[in-house]
Image (cartoon, rainbow, N blue to C red; front, side, top):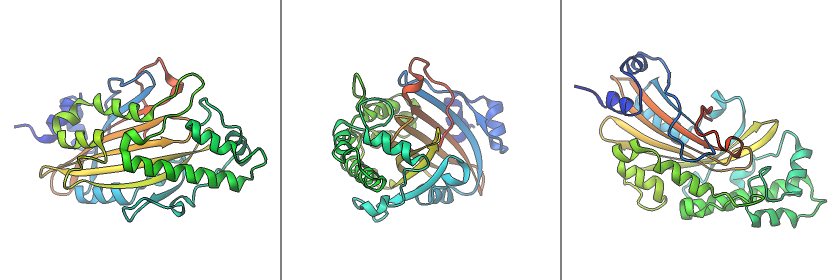
Length: 295
């Protein structure tokens, strides 16, 4: 009789040999996913973790350890840990460094395009600062933009994400993230309640779902790149945990990112994890899905 681990990993395209290796402690790269758009990079992984699901849930929701395994991450800060609407103080640790002079010029001269991910009204907000705006004024303006985006997403979910202004046509990260969920057949089949919540957030919240928010400032191409991240997870039956990590705003380089994972009990003190992530970026348009490093 096959276990939940066997069934889920087979549905994800892993062979019997790969599944056996994962149970024995090896990491398996399962290739890319069916593309949700022509802007997408994707990857699916299966791996083994020492520890119970409750421990994994604690780290995932409340103790994000991205700085430990991602060398690009400079700083990280939790947002609205009280479950509220957040404050500017939550973003006080965000700095536009390195390359402060370059970043100041980018924001002072913000315009529709792919250099920065800003809506039309956010571009106007930076323009109002004037060409002589100080570095501190630009950082403070950015922190307010981030707080406003967090509040809009928490109140209205994907529909609350302002589109990015581009030279020809606006780009909707909300629609992109929605399409990524719609292109994931395993989640819909295995956890329809969580699938619906991922689409309808903040509506239709399952009884045992928990969430957290944080920001990450990574250095990509020698420039600070800020992501607003939503993590949400819930128990699945008696031996599983399903979760999502959604980068609902990224300041530059990429458009958005979304990962869906399933943690499944293996033995008394071990867990097997299936994780699939999709990254949207204008830089790969036309190439379909390919491997992407998860962050």
